[in-house]
Image 1: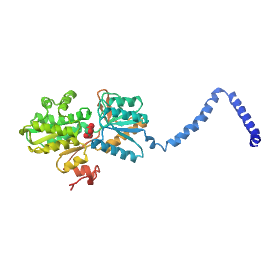
Image 2 (image 1 turned 60 degrees about the horizontal axis):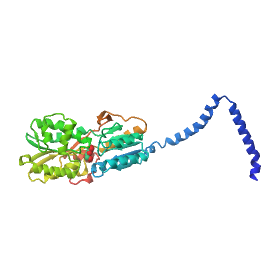
Image 3 (image 1 turned 30 degrees about the vertical axis):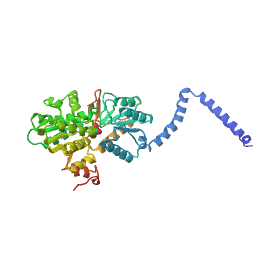
Image 4 (image 1 turned 30 degrees about the horizontal axis):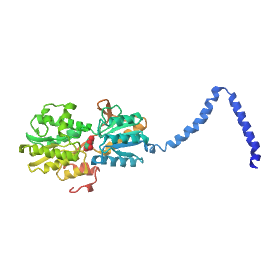
Length: 398
Ligand code: BGC
């Protein structure tokens, strides 16, 4: 019944439609073409535009991925936590993967993020040079690469470098030793990070700039590195020369390696190399391990030891007088710098840069952040009052 009743209307519509088409077909082509295009495109573009605007913040969702080197060091757990806090504040989900000190896992992490459709990857390489393959994979997929804290080397597939001023970190560590040394002939023990980490070179370079003149003037003498001794008259070292020294004094950023090396250095050292000593330790984890080894040696009467990262355990060591100083690298700053850079890339812009770092192939733009020396004198102000760590993490605070 229904279909019969509506048949004339359907017919009429059909006739009008054909008539309309014929009329349209009769119009000049130049007029006809833009009209339907404009008619069809306008509403389609208008719709997503309206929905896109309120989605601008969530548009970051799933588009940024973070790859950190290892869960085995408190430093990177700090970064993870502070990344999560910041992304949560922004109402944005983020995928954070750990490479666990394994470059092939790092590559797999990057490939995983690419498959999930991220547009920017923030990555701290485990091994600077091995990570070039991961960076290249991202570049090939059109994904922007932000090198985070550590520089990826030997590739042009790095778009930006978010970092602290690592030369300044090494200089601050060394300056602390210099400021606490009196007279001449002070025994100096040198330790460094992993040679696979570009930062280990920057920290050492910064420290050498400060220590070398003080070795030359007799304030210190080097106890535990014949390579450093052989080069002690050179104010500036080449990367190869630094690599030779690092080969003797590396901790591989590993607490046990640091402890074993310190113990074997102490076993080899003579009584005259003990007493009051000065120790360049590259970061907090290794500083605690080295400090424990020196503290256990009955012939060490006093040691001054450096560190970096303001890890909770090392801040406690500083309060307790077991570690002399740390260099606070405010990870909150680094995290927000990285997110700002990612947002710039997502918006098709270029993050601002104040300098560049050569990675062996290109000069990577960067805007390094400042660092702060922390010891017993300013620990409350720099760590607690600044809100970096809550007071209840520590004992023995006044
Ligand atoms: C970082 C340090 C860290 C070290 C060991 C370096 O690249 O800059 O903050 O302590 O790696 O993970």
